[in-house]
View 1 (cartoon, rainbow, N blue to C red):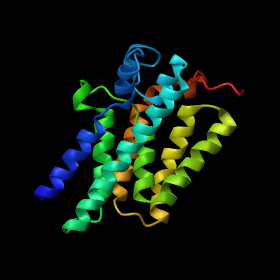
View 2 (cartoon, rainbow, N blue to C red; view 1 turned 45 degrees about the vertical axis):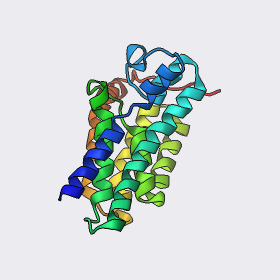
View 3 (cartoon, rainbow, N blue to C red; view 1 turned 135 degrees about the vertical axis):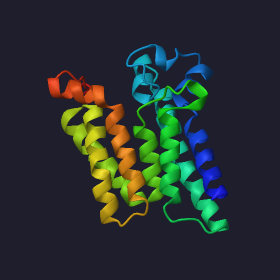
View 4 (tube, rainbow, N blue to C red; view 1 turned 90 degrees about the horizontal axis):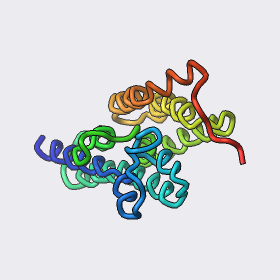
Amino acid sequence: MTTTLLTLLAAYLLGSLSAAVLLSRAFNLPDPRSYGSGNPGATNVLRTGNKRIAALTLLGDGLKGTLAVWLAMLVGTQISTPDWLPALAGLAAFIGHLWPVFFDFKGGKGVATALGILLALNPLLGLACLLAWLTVFALTRVSSLSALVASAAVPFFAAWLDEAGLGALIILVILIFWRHRTNIQRLVRGEEGGFRKP
């Protein structure tokens, strides 16, 4: 029990590292919480016009989800742990991204972190959800709608693949929808902006 709790705590602290804020500080960009949507994530960083830092933010946010799952898997190779621990560790990192202890509990929406978690748990699961995101985005050019559709598909893909920790993944999806509630309202009103085709 102690090892499980320590693993989850480490995963949460890992998730609390905001790639958007840390990279913006390192490269003298404005704090992503001070402009645009105020969301410390790759999409908002992209509003600065710095595609390289936005890409690094996306990578960093995804990687911390992956590392949290891998940490739990590594612990499981050393001692006996529940088969759902990697998924729960991923959820802990996801919660850390949403409510980071290092940044006044004001975090991002977690889409990139969720993808990193899914890819680490099961590459097929992650790739299926990524394909869903890409398909919707190609059709609509709306990032939030793409994220919501891909997230809604997670429990179905996970059940199909018989993935352990389905409960943790369902909670993750619920939190994604909660963090996108203002986007959902704008989508319903037809006011949600998208990316123009080049």
